[in-house]
Length: 385
Figure 1 (cartoon, rainbow, N blue to C red):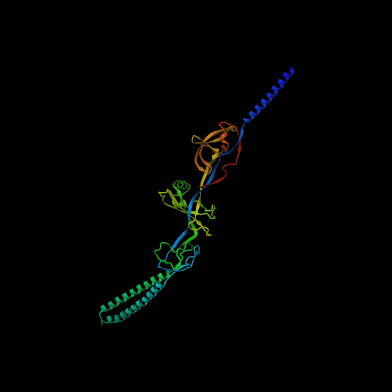
Figure 2: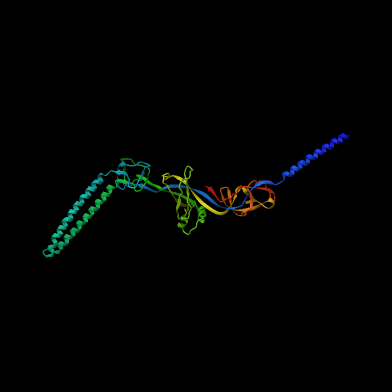
């Protein structure tokens, strides 16, 4: 009987020890937990907005004939690079050559008539001075001389016109550039009324990128620029970049040159034009890309979206207070950049906030802060589509 009491006592002691151990473990499980935190700081943020753009050479000149004729020669091919004054096409010129010869002959006839009229005036003049013949005859002779001179001038003008028409059969490039398509072949009859040009010469030493902003984007962008006039604002605009169709970034930066003075009432957008250098002829007229335009915001507070939670349509963060206890605080959001919020009010520089694991937190809960890398460290850049 005594042994049974002793055995029961040992069991009770073991059960008590196990219970105390579990109690201690449970108490340890309710201690402060570690959470990553960051310090609220102000930063300068550069965002990059991308806008679809059409690329065109600074000059896209249609080459059209000024006279009708058959194409005798084509001296270039599609894609050739040509210089100003280079011969491109030659049209048939037999009829025009004959017109030049006829006009030249008419000049000779008119010159002979002027000479004859001048001789008549010279012969009559002394006779009139001696009152041998009437002065009416001299006036008539001088009138005939003036008419002959007018005929000569008309003949010379006709010759010059015929000669220019003949010169128009030799079609030359008006600028340096790249040849476009050639819709007509040798032997084709072409003229001034053709729907298609003979070709197009694109001057792509520099290229234009045309893109549009909507009204909201325009207002946001203009508020960041100083200047009273459009020209003053344009001069202070930052350089822009160009994203090519393959996703690569173009080597050279561009500059915004013009802003359309009116908003398109149908689309609610306004047109911009930027110019880019093209020394390697990489860019061609007609290609597409995206203009990447920077926008600067200074002295703003950024919070990662994951550091906030929403309650009844409002945004809150957990700030770390005295004794490392957390307190929820409403924040006013001014804008969204990438995966961050621009905070208008609610937190102040120097305060600490929890950046992750918010679902586990409650007001007044004590934590072990673990500082992460500062979010607002100098200048921050984001890219937006």
